Length: 398
Image (tube, rainbow, N blue to C red; front, side, top):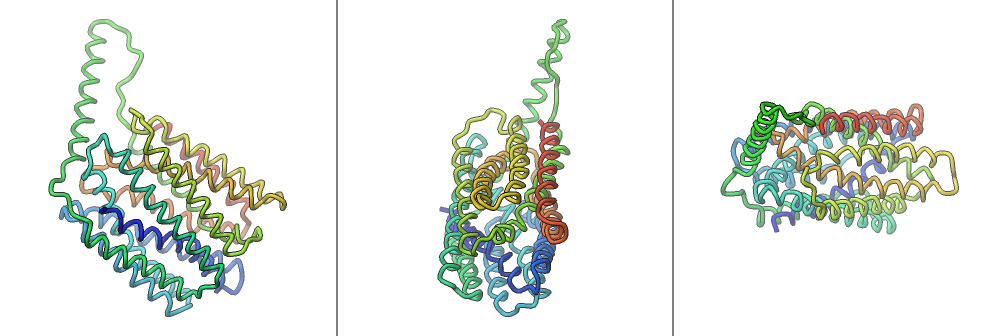
């Protein structure tokens, strides 16, 4: 039940993820200005959230209180969204969005820690997948709300109030159901287990060498630096591709309702990916397979180039690519959550959000900037290439 508030929170932000770029695009004087303005807004918000993510992660682990930061994120997000209705000045909107991003990031590290501390290590995959699948269903419903609201011409102010109301509901439900774990030790046990396993395997290989037995394997620790670099590049490529994508879809051409419908199907792909990942049983916990969805997403980015060359099937092709990308994203993120809880030490739980935010911040600006200056062809090529480089880093990590 503690996840129920997150369900409604993601419902609101699922709607906002498509509505906000379309709104900023609509109030600009020219299409290029609209792309640029939203790129700046997204980048400023993400850059503001980077130090905040590290701070919130450090504070919740230091105080061992997690509920208060979740409540803070949901309540202040609702307040900031109400303030969005008071102005159409792009400078003020960017300022409000940056402030909201700082407070919104307060719930990220606590929800990861709650999932890892409330359940045993062997159940992490199932529970991370359940959480992400549940909240993705919320996001999907939010997109459906956006679809119907756009179809029936709901006003901009009412759209913002709807998202704010969903976040306030998330605040109320979390105040009732979220409880701080009485004991915090599961992540420490996993660290000890990994250290003991590494030492035990080292002694086993040493004994084989002393007996004169040829070794066909090496003692090797995970390359955490490669993992972090791969994660930043993956986030950069994803943000570069997806930040201007609602505007690309709307120019195919497609109505606002159709844009929401296409991203609903992308969310359906996410839900299917989380369901599949939750049932998968892998002894490696994803180390050996984390690069595969990254590689395929890179190839799919190049497939989007065909949508620029054909006018008959561009909407259908784009929709199919987004569905597969959603499925792969879910599968990748489950591996990331599992590995990050094993690799990132206590007190630095916000680091994983910092790495993701760092890549997303650069991508959210460069994607719309490239699209507005030289076109979407270059966006798809560069994003695809970055996915492939990220794949190489994950191969080094594994």
